[in-house]
Amino acid sequence: MQKTFTNLVAAATVASTLAGCAGSYRAIQPERITSYQSTSGKGVPVEFSYRYGALLTHGPNKKYVKKNVSAGISW
Image 1 (cartoon, rainbow, N blue to C red):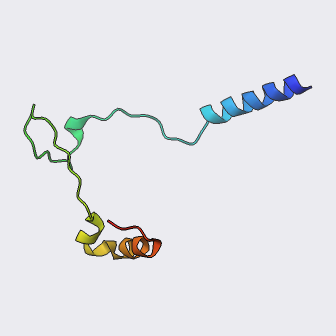
Image 2: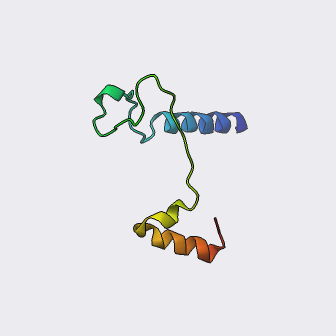
Image 3: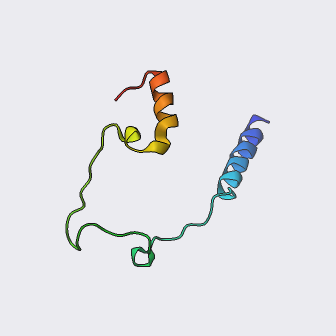
């Protein structure tokens, strides 16, 4: 009885994983992305940076700044 229950649970898990509601996969084709504009030239290494206090730099983030301050999260 326990073996059939285990097999049933395993089959249900596999079926739900395979029949999930996730969308289908499509490969990204960078040449078709029109809204992206690179700031570096071709073949140049990509630069990464981090901005401390980024929430404080723009107005619409006031709500999140207040939440962080009230939660005791500081920069």
